Length: 424
Image 1 (cartoon, one colour):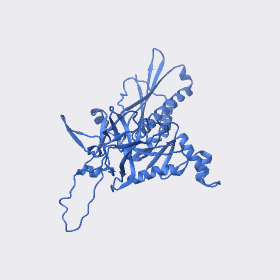
Image 2 (cartoon, one colour):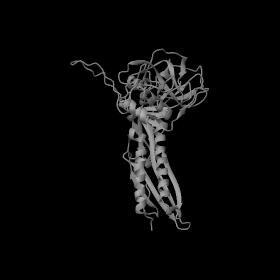
Image 3 (cartoon, helix red, strand yellow):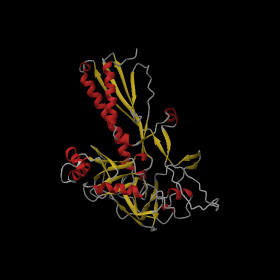
Image 4 (cartoon, helix red, strand yellow):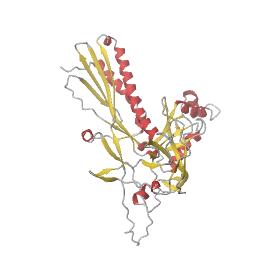
C-alpha cells in the first residue's frame, strides 16, 4: 500500500508552498512561458522562443507605387532549455518524527534553498549575458547612478515599463543612505523609509530590490587589444535559419565569434567598447553618440572570442535582415580599432532588465502516484511546480523526503538587460 500524508504533513506542505511562492522575488519580475511537457520531452527539453520583430518604414505618397519597396521580414529566435533540476532530499527516523518542529524546520530550509536556486539562476543569466553596461567611477550613492541605467535603455529603444534593478546589499544601502538625507528633514516619506527601513523603492523608473548575494566581476586583464571594424566582422548578418546536412536549422543570433589581436587576459564576463562603434536606437536606427557596450561570453583561442551582442553595422550592401536588426553605427572603420575594457575594478554585479528580456520556463515531473511513494504537488502563481515525495523504509524505520522543482531560464534579448558596476 502506498504511504499517505497525515493531516499535519498536508498543512506543512501548504505552508511550504506559500512561503516558497513568497520567496520567488525574481521570478515574479520576468516573463513566464509554460511549455507542453510532452513536446519538451521529445525535443530534449529545448524550445525556440521568438525575439521581438523590428520593422522598417518608408515614405509613401498616395498615387505612387511602392511595389519595389516590399521587404523580407526575418524572425529571430533563441533556444530555451529546461535545464535546472533541483532537489532537497532528507531523511527522518520515527524517533525524529516525535518532534514535529524538526520536520517543519527541515521543510522550511528546503523551501528556502529551492527558491534561492531559482532566484540565483535568473540573476546568473542576467549578470552573465546582459550587454547594457553602466560603469560608475565611485561607490553607489545617488540617483544619478540609477538614472544612467534608465538613459542607456531609453537611448536604445528598450520599453520604458516593467523595468527592474537588483542591487547587492552594499550598493543598495549606499543608495538608501543618499535618500535618507535627501530632504534633510523628517516628514518626507521617501527619506523616512530609507532612514528607518533602509528602503529604496522605485528610482528612475526601476523597481529596486536588495540581494543578499550577488555575482562579482573581476578586473579586466586584457590590454592594447584591437579588432577590425572595416570588413564583414562589423556586418554580422542575422538569419532565422541555416542549411546543414540535415536540412534547415534555427540560428541563435545573440552571439558572434570575432577575431581580435589577442585574447590574452580576456575572460568570460569582461565588458568593453570598441572605438568608432556607436549604439543606435533599435527602432529609429539613429546613432546615440555613445559607444556600444559588449560582453565576452567565452574565449575560443588566442585570437578568437565569442561576444554579445553581434556587431550589426549594416554598412556594405546590407540585407533586409541587417537593416531590420541594425544595432550600431560604425562611425570610424578601422583595421585596428581599440577595445576599451569597462570592468577596471573588482565589483559586485548589479543587474537591471526589462521584464520581457528574461524568461522562466517551468517544468513538470511525471511522477507515478501508485508506485509506493506518497506524492504531493502544487504550482505557484508563476507556474513553477513544487513536488514533495515521501517514502517509508520498514527495515530501518526511516522516512525519506524530497522536495523538487524543474525549470529553465533564458535571456531572450541581451540588449534589453544589463549590469551596473561601481568603483570602476
